[in-house]
Image (tube, rainbow, N blue to C red; front, side):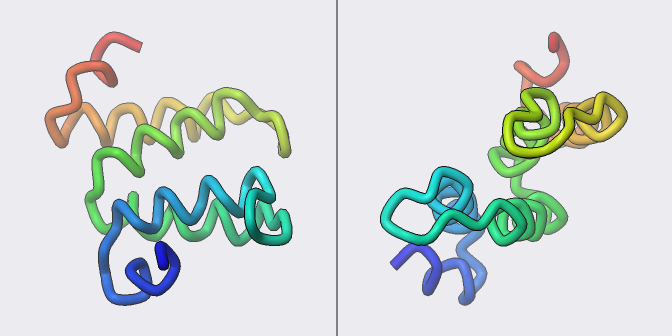
Amino acid sequence: WYERAAIHGHFLSSCFAADYYLRGEGVAKDVGKGLEMCAQAARAASPPAMMKMASFYSAGSDFPSDQAQTRYWLEQAAAHGVLEAQYR
């Protein structure tokens, strides 16, 4: 259901679906698809997706960490009013 909602522009659903793909929970694990779903929501100005992108790039568990991308997404989230992003 999350993926169907994401297709129709519900960006919080994109974040949830991305988590499932990244963990392989209920679907075949697909890191690329998970990242792309979350990035799509983040590019559409979804602050929760921006924070998730920062987290993904910071942790680097399924791909190399990227501090430049972490910083970019934190700055984007901060610009959209996410206080936590201003202090990380």
